[in-house]
Image (cartoon, helix red, strand yellow):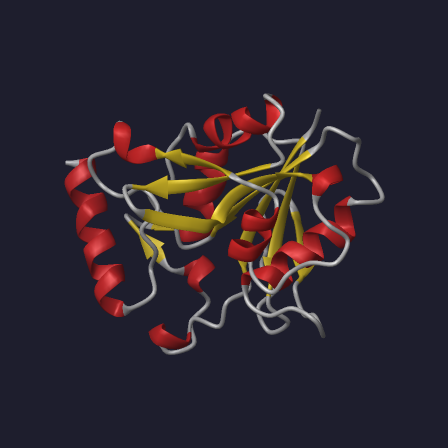
Length: 195
């Protein structure tokens, strides 16, 4: 069994004025670097990028997520599947994470793939009542050939197991950076953690 990681980094960042979120910094570390560090060791690292925003990666493979059939995060998932399906074994797992998740738990990968190792087809991250379908994992051999329009619909169709981090995380580890206010709040959070 191989674990392949996909960082979804192809968004337009429109609520932040069109910036490349992957290069935003929190605690003087780029968001993409924070996520890569938190993921740890994987068999392969893929980064789904928009056509206008190629990333210089310290390690990993940038895959363009432009698609005629899928938009948003699903375009990134579809690009990763196109890349991995010809190479994947029957038990290989794809774990996806949004690039703008600066406080991704260090145990994310281990916990998100555990249900799949135990026989589930998919799993997704939850914090309290909030679902995070971009932070999920899939057994590659069980992902349907014809994909739905969203990660949420894909996970529902696969009967995804929900992994709730609120049991041991007081603060939401999956909060995203979508606005300037989010960026400021996440920067303050990082500063308070580092002090």
